[in-house]
Amino acid sequence: MPKALLFPSYLGSGFGHVGRCLALAGELAAQGWEVAFVLAGPHLARVRQAGYPVYEPKKPFRPRSETKEGPAFTIFSDMNFQLVRDGFRNPRVVRATVEEGLRFVEHFKPDVLVGDTWPLTSVLGRRAGLPVVQIIKSVVHPAQPNLIWWEPPPPGLLSPDPRPVFNPVLRRWRLPEINRAEDLLTGDLLLVPSIPELDPLPPDLPDTHYVGALIASAGPSTQEPPWFATLDASRPLLYVTIGGGAGPVGSRRFFALVTEAFADSVWQVIVSTGTRFSPADLPVPPPNVRFEPWVPGLAVIARSDVVMFHGGYGTTMECVRCGVPSVVVPFHSEQESNGRRLEASGAGLVLLPSSIPPRAVPGRWGGGKFVTLVRPFSDLTASQLRQAVEEVWSQASYRQNAERLRDELARYGGPGQAAELIMTLVT
Image 1 (cartoon, rainbow, N blue to C red):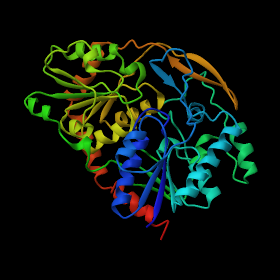
Image 2: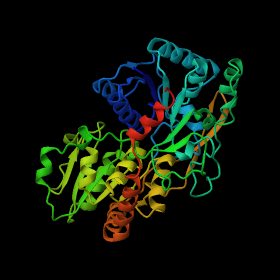
Image 3: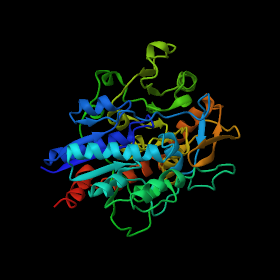
Image 4: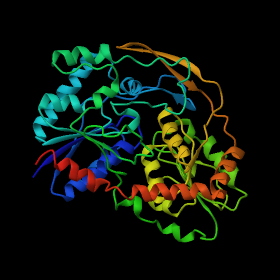
């Protein structure tokens, strides 16, 4: 029985990396593989509930805010900023993390390592002599990383330099040194969980394959709850979700804006508040607005006329899979990047939560100084929310383009295709 050890990036609060790995794990397990995970954090219980063994780091790094208050929007330009967030402060931390990972590898004895934007998967594979699979988006592909692709990066950004933190350890292990964090995402097989229009890359990249969305074909997200029966098929449905790590975008003020925007409208509105808020703690909504701490995402999206969301990659691909247009209200640059792809394809509209000029937030880590830009407060209005949703709903081209992307996505095999490609590494 072949074995795969999965390393999803887990320190960003959102479920996207873990969700893709769970979808792949389900397919591998169905084909007779033994699968285990390495992760900690908020989604640990969900992975264990799915029945997979988990190797939990003894001292997982904790994401650290660079400002005292959560900004409405954070601007960063590349994956180097993730290294700071994930706690790779100095070469000692890098070395200790790899050594711990090698102990997990020695115990589980996998045939292949699979990473989803976890920075050290390739290093572990090289040190253990194992093939490495990377689940990777185009904006961090080592051949052509470009997170802010739709405009020049704003002045004032200073990317963290990963070389003083990683290269001393890589030299010690006689591994290739890096110039940027994306250089860590090399592998024997690179799987893009999307389609070329939404994740464009140069043609004929070695060992890189589009596989379509890595979404489980069945499970809780596809099951309709009983209250679905109360929906009125003659009225449009708006689904609002802001993800697991949405910060100020998912605040009481935002939920109040949604209520204000659609209280007197024809819209039926389902709002997923996430676990940070209980619907009981929010003002009582009007009859056409429903707050729920959790909803089955795919099932609701499939029934929706428009989805308003934060731009998370997982929800992006769920909207594409269902052929539903969207309004994206991002709270950082990576989410804006996803939204801009939908916008460029004519299947969505980006609405930034703040028009306030950004201010610089300097920081320091083992690689020296860096600067992030933030817009500290949201000045989004209810009328802006409603106008954006009405535009996407009323103009047929948005739905037509969303359905075009859906049809293109259907040409790819998703988890099944990914599993077949991985099998070629161990046969």
